[in-house]
Amino acid sequence: MHIRLAGPLRSIVQALQRPLVALMSFILERPAFSVRLTQLLLRYPALHQQLRSLAIRTGLMSEAPTDQESQAFVPKLIDLTPQARQIYDDLTLAIEQRQAERH
Image (tube, rainbow, N blue to C red; front, side, top):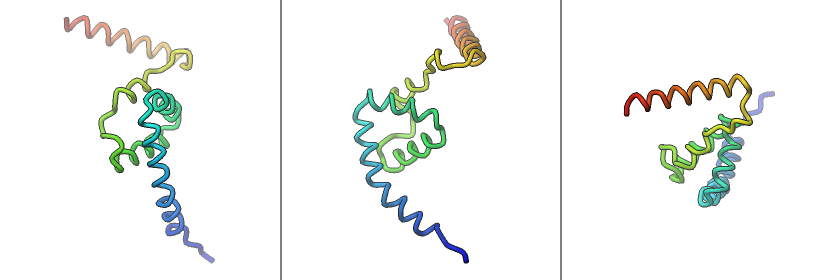
């Protein structure tokens, strides 16, 4: 016996989309809360991308990252492993050196 799930699953997703979009709108109107939630969601890139795509498709967001999202990408050094911290420090130094060369 073979059960087809695509139709019912699609119906469930569509039914949940409207409340999810309303919740996303509520969150996006509160920058401090939105930044914290974005930082949390960035730990789950696939989920973050799905929610971001939904927000773009429904007109809640533009495709370009906002200042708010950009701030969420700044790592907290305490959360980085020693190797990641070294890479971050090396990149920061290289960026500073390149900017100094241009001025």
